[in-house]
Image (cartoon, rainbow, N blue to C red; front, top):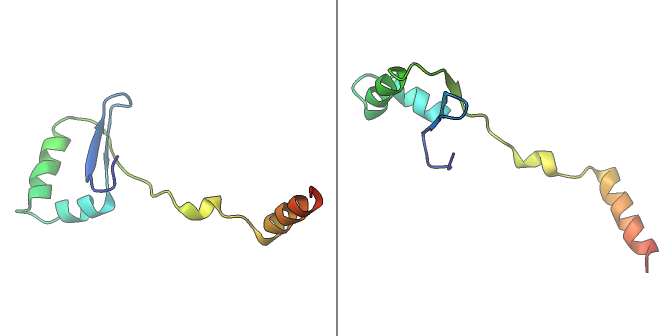
Length: 76
């Protein structure tokens, strides 16, 4: 799913993936998101909320950085 896309239909998993912002907008009647949600519900597929992947999972701890620096200094 692209960042600016509010929903995605995944036919391989038979699910509809939506964003939190789309769900919040769809909770208000007379909005385009509400009308789109009605169409998505008519597909009879489970609707799941997209999980946010945080970049902080790839950060190194202080000990990992020290080990990396030490290993780089020993190789010269």
